[in-house]
Amino acid sequence: MEWPCRYSWWHLGIVFFVHWAAGEMGNKAKSCEAVRQVYSAKGYSLSGVPQSEISGEHLRICPQGYTCCTSEMEENFSNISKMEFDNSLRESSLSVQGLLITQNRNFDRYFQDLLNKSEQILLDTFPSKYGELYTQNDGKIFRDLYVELRQYYRGSGVNLEEALTEFWSHLVDRVFKAQNSQFTFTDDYLDCLAKQYDQLKPFGDIPREMKLKATRAFIAARSFVQGLSAAADIVRKVTQVPMSRECTREVMKLMYCPLCRGHYNVKLCDNYCLNVMRGCLANQADLDPEWRNLIESLLLVAGKFNGVAGVENIIGTIHIKISEAIAHMQENKEVITNKVFKSCGNPKKANKGAKTEERKRKGKAIAEDKSTIPSMDNMVSDVKVMLAEIQDYWVSLPNIFCSEKVMAGPGNEDKCWNGMARARYMPERMGSGLANQINNPEIDVDITKPDMTIRQQIMQLKIMTNRLRNAYNGNDVDFQDTSDDISGSGSGDGCTDTVCIKTVSGDSSVIHTQTHVVFKDKSPGSNGNASSWNLSLLLAALLVAHFARW
Image (cartoon, rainbow, N blue to C red):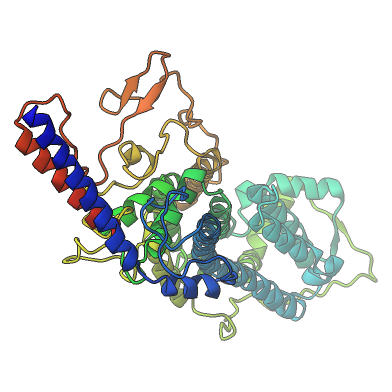
């Protein structure tokens, strides 16, 4: 019976020691003044807020050691952390949206100013330059052309090739009649003239060149402006994706549990912070590949805006090309007239009272004053810088929260908050994106159920990128999705051999990697003598007493 007696004295001593340690800690409980100040600054009453640490068995999110937070405080801090998380995302989103919208407006205004100025120069100079040619129907043929160009730029379904063909067809009628005003031309005669158009080439090669260049220029301008707008809209919609309940808990644990624990100025362990945020923002990070494709496509199209063959030069000189085309027909008047008369017959002479004087003024290219239009070179340079800055936006979102201000950094690995205490964080850092969260030790992320709103925005990125790539190649086509199904549905259970086990019921349970150091006692039935077992028990008591002081 000697051994059981000695065994009992060991236990009594250990129990006494634990109670003594707890009593000592109770006498030296930490002040909660710092927590009270923060809580009050958030707008809450200090009624019921502890003056010093209390037992934390009531806590549902934070570690249940000694704490300065009541259940009500924990809930309020959780609400605050969610609001601050959402606000930080919203501010970041608004910043990126603002950059994209500003560039969208700048380029949209620029392209429209080019078109408006071209039209205004035409309206100001053509009446005195071409007289009756312009005054027929008060220049409606020219006004209608610019209306069609604006509608095409706006993407209203106008066929630009048909619009230009119709314009040149009407213009050749008017120029031919103005050059031969001593004759009267019937509708049948003008139909005959129209049939000779391809053979005559009254405007030289200008219509063909203008159709090709203007189409490419307007496609590029329109797609670029639409691309900037689509990017801003995608950022806006993704920001509206709500925070998951699991993420709400972990963000609270990250941001305010250290405070409840009494660590007012402690910084976060780097990998711990990034694992929480990469888990919370895993779906957003999946936008990264297609987002980068969109940015690269915008940069490609922007490269087409300046230079002699650039969008700026083509859209801004439409009136000059029209004037050059008229001048070409005037210079070849005799040849064209003889061919028409030979093919269509001699027209009837006009009445004697009709005006027969032909204006001799020739159409010449009009020098354009671009003093009121900003430099396209500067605009392209600015937008390229902006696009480069936001290219990694989605994968850099965790850095909004895990900045140098809040993370401990190198050399402080043992003094940072790891989610449980101020100590080293053991797990490795997770990668970005949904697939990389399968072993995230902080947040349970179901990689088989991607967020559908974000999947839809990934598809929108693909659509817009396709349009921009076609615009870069001069093609005006609508995107039709032929990609694989991205709904995320499937027949599998989403588990792999390394992370899942099957319960008896057949349900899958995720196995998590160990987050923090756990001290395990040996079982009573394990091998070893009584002294080593009792020594282990004493060590455990010491550890309990030590950690209870945190």
